[in-house]
Amino acid sequence: MPGLTWDHTENIALALFDKFPDVDPLKVRFTDLHKWITELADFGDDPQQSSEGKLEAIQMAWYEEWQEANE
Image 1 (cartoon, one colour):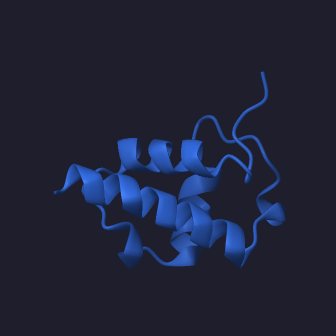
Image 2 (cartoon, rainbow, N blue to C red):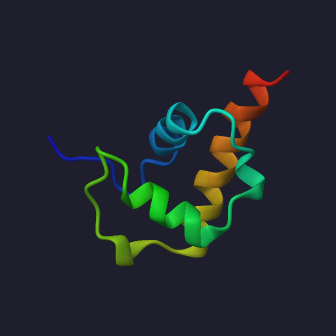
Image 3 (cartoon, rainbow, N blue to C red):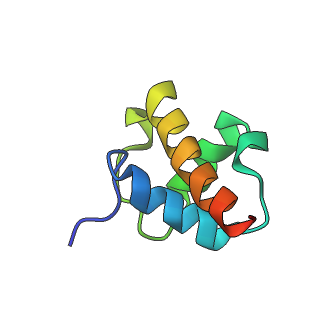
């Protein structure tokens, strides 16, 4: 079974929320976000295939999860 790829925005966001539940996603630099994503146990894509747009989409999906949990 293939792991997470850059196109699995929602699944990556959920994995980040599970791993870092107390972190405000909007305060995470893209360099750190990229590192955290590529270090996820289920991540199996080429780290070089990320883009600013993909990172931003993941960050915003993570933020939505984080916001719901902190209401």
